[in-house]
Image (cartoon, rainbow, N blue to C red):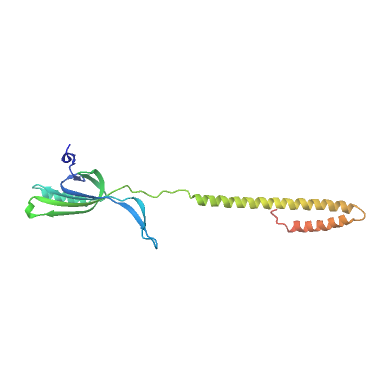
Length: 203
């Protein structure tokens, strides 16, 4: 098969036209980063750039002006459309510009100059879970739980100590002559009772 046999009949939104020549521009999306005191730059690759297609064609025939009107109507239609490219095949593109030219020396011919951009699907951002926020929230909950456990344990220890001091004081009060240990115990009981009275009600 020769290269001419491999060429496809060109159409734009289903309207046929002949082709003089085509031009395809491809690129990469890059972001150069320059730094002080460095002669070279780091070029960050951000993916493939969109393709730009230029097509120079023509319409021919006694009804070339009617064909031109239909082509202009198709060009002004909203949204992307299908382009059958002679070498690239079927492409979904957005029309940037269409220029038509009528020349006296060419007679019943209308030249067409298309500028297309490769079209893609509209993609919306997706919601995702913020892992750092979840970790911080779990850490805060753990801190609050640990503080509550400490307060409960401290309150229980104070109540237990105060009860033991009260029991020892009662045993000392039952004797005739308070010993030095009993006097110390009574003082301790007074301190424990005062601490218990000043303790928060939540303990």
